Length: 342
Image (tube, rainbow, N blue to C red; front, side):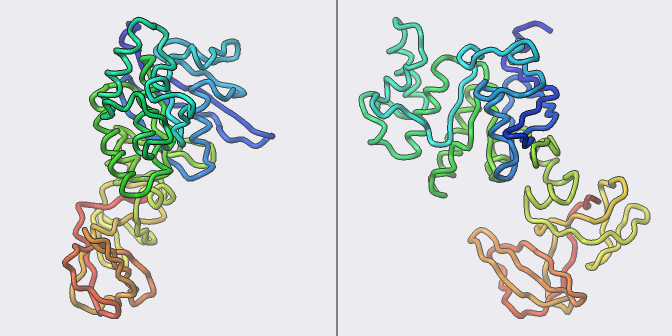
């Protein structure tokens, strides 16, 4: 392949890393395509930040192979220093230099002094902070600091951008706002990006594909829609969204018998043990299948927890205008296009 076609491509093979004899990355294989945004999703302690830091060169794996833009940056015989990998990184806390101005922070990694001032001005414009160059980091809001951190990471013109939970220290409203801004910026940049998060919404919004990690291993890598609709197991199903997983009874002619009736099956797993039904695939009506135990109102919709007569507790998502109340007798029916067996 032509080297230009590999610009920004990240390939990881057989990567393993331990701390104090505790394995945090185990035989990781991952390929991130050029200009792709990959969300690395997993619970705290699963190894996702360590994986990001090994790509950046901030941690040294025990074994494996990493190449960036077709160039080997780590192997048994090669270990390229972080500053020579052409990788930009945005940390969780922005990590700006407090004694420097915003312009000095952004220009820190720009080596060409002649064009530095112009480049910094362009980046400030790009992240929506024109005129902020003379200010100090302590005068900025959390969202502004993260935009400066993004500009600083982009200043050396890296081929790959790494983001380590950059919104985790922001309040929920600002988090959504900045997430949308960064999503637009990354779309305009067309730069290969790996984004670490433990938040499913962020992973789905930002990622062209989502790689789910658990206990140092990659469990599933798929586009958000496929990951949500066809998870590889019950753990992934519950981690990426609300899930009802019913015991698997039987499947005849792609139809499965469940506590709420017969449901068509789209995906059949090897040796299935349950069937996945998302809350939005259920419709609530008057009846006597069960009783409403809890109604969680979110404004745009509501989550209703229903106890069926056989004791099964299920979740159904309803429109915000639904008038379900605790104690109501209801019936539940499936209105989805087909479920996945796990």
